[in-house]
Length: 258
Image (tube, rainbow, N blue to C red):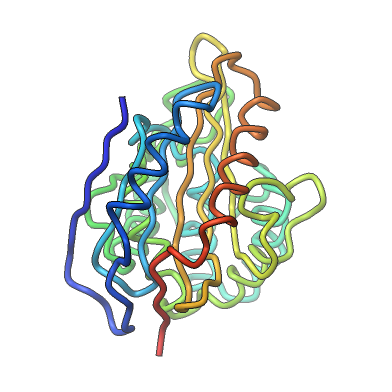
């Protein structure tokens, strides 16, 4: 069953348009959601804005590699040039070993989690708690952070406005070929995906992105748990969702940073 909510927090420095035709977009998504093979969710918010639209039955879950975005920003702030060689592969090809190096630059696991959480809070996500313990063997600690679509969209909406975010945004707009799916298919979009299996082996595939619209820029977060449980099926669902978004780009709320 579709879940549609709109919530507000205090806006940051940029300005953003009001959400146009919010009910129309939500109504259309509710119908579209029924055609997809899996459980899905989407959140949209104008860059710099305060109103988050959350649509679909999937609302929260493991961050996987999407958490590498605030991690890379935090490490670049902390270590400058020393972090850049690791930020590149961590973002552009989602390299976990490189992301672990970024994490280690931030001190102890607890210190690293606090540093990444501070970046999230600066991006107006004050709810997410970054995981500092390796709770699943074979996976990073930070990747197991629980990150809702709503909080993730709120952070993404303020990402272009954050100090030291330019390098990471550049990397997000120049992903390697095997990362060019979902929102990355839209020209000029900065995006980062994350994916992984649950304890039963079924994949969650999710993505955050900043899309250029006629009204400015829109932060979008997507997630899919495909019925088949495979990674490739999750990518296919996100590609379908992206095509749906592209056909309605004029209906998306836009904003920008000053």
